[in-house]
Length: 348
Image (tube, rainbow, N blue to C red; front, side, top):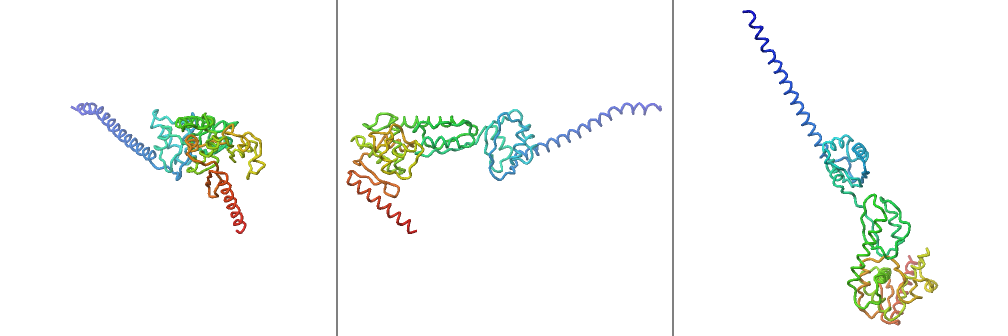
């Protein structure tokens, strides 16, 4: 009779062990779930929380940079609170996250999720370079070479008149020669488009001559409303076999030699250089600047007028004349204006 309890204890002992194991497993599983949930909540917080930076930051992501490199660079740039945050975020995203090399503008307060989206999409920052109308090709070359963030160097100016003045966008690491080629391709397309819609019976017969004429118009006036009239004066003079007598052509010939006269004198006007339209009939041999679209249109579609002369009016525009006598009166008016200006400046 005394052996029965011992047998009962022996029979129940294994089930008690299994119960302990089962309870331990449940507790461990619950703890793991809590840890995972807490970890997920924490990672979600660091992923979506605003960054510590109060201003936009330009950030360069080099080609081949790994997670460890990126996390430390982001921290040094001040856009994440701790390098470990980016490491965790990148690991959670897995292989689907592929950051692209380039320069990025990280907005003020951007979260890790915002930053990684920028990197993954490759939404690189677009830098801007403005080429104003009327710049010489030497000026264009200098501007491109001095622009930040590009590679290579342009060693010589492009042909005069081959660049279309405009606002151009480029990305970090772009080759300067590629940007220049883009500017020249834009000019090729624009001038061909405008030439196709040109007026009949123009006194110039080629695309190159159109650009030469447009460059004169560009340098003579900055008023969009006057370009058509300036074009008409040059067209009328060409048809009559008259010299164009354009001051900017004289200045350009000296600028080619590194001399930029502040005021043109009779000695300058008598210079025999090839671009001097006071000495040589017809258009100059090359453009004297890079004309913009409006000047090209004015050259292709000049206004109809009987004007053969124009002179500055002192207010940024010009006075136009049909006869030499009328033009001489306008010149005297302009000189009187300049004289008054000097007197007023002397009284100040």
